[in-house]
Image (cartoon, rainbow, N blue to C red; front, side, top):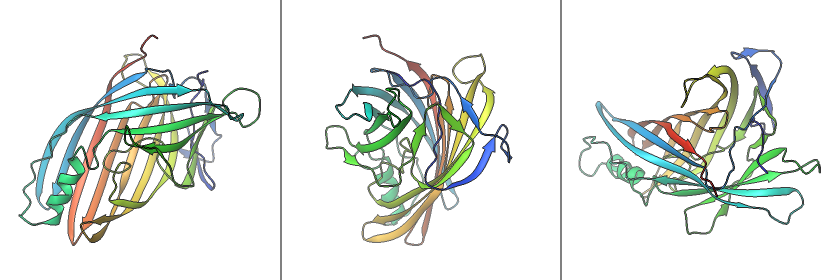
Length: 282
């Protein structure tokens, strides 16, 4: 069965209550509708526009990403109604033409970030639709495994966020991790100890792929991790803002990441926008 609602990521410590336009102390908002499509064969196409900075140099590049539900399985576990596997197909995105002096480790790291065998590679994510109250309806979604296509999926780290169904919008959680892949961050094997702090806000209406306005939620994540690359150690931090809309989830990701390595600095801003969503008839 398909879940019929939106969501909120509430994990361990509830820190702040937000709703409406983000005012403090207001009531939580519950949104009805399908904000997490799980139909087998559902497809999204995204355009990714990237701007990169190194010192005073700036360059742009662009590409596309396809996202697809590739498998829906009804498992035997009594509390798991379904497992759903999503795949992100990263088409070749040329590295931005930043002028980096020869031998500069940031130049090597930039090449790794845009390498289809590096950070910007195809990726699978697996979710479980859970029935935690025994009424045969899914009441939350949990992301629990990830990995490259064709390889063994590995369990994600502890302290994973789950999605309430119906989704409650307006609380903030700490020490969790992204529900969906963040290019240059989630798939990046040079990063360890990835952490994101999540906040969710509700908006009354917004227009994405259609002219008609629709309810949506705005999820913000503060990201941080440690870089280990070519024997050197550094840091990565930044943010990711994801917009989720009724029957289109997610439709836009606004990502800004800074990498500091061996005294060098690199910043990447990626805007990932859905240009198409469809459900393939069986």
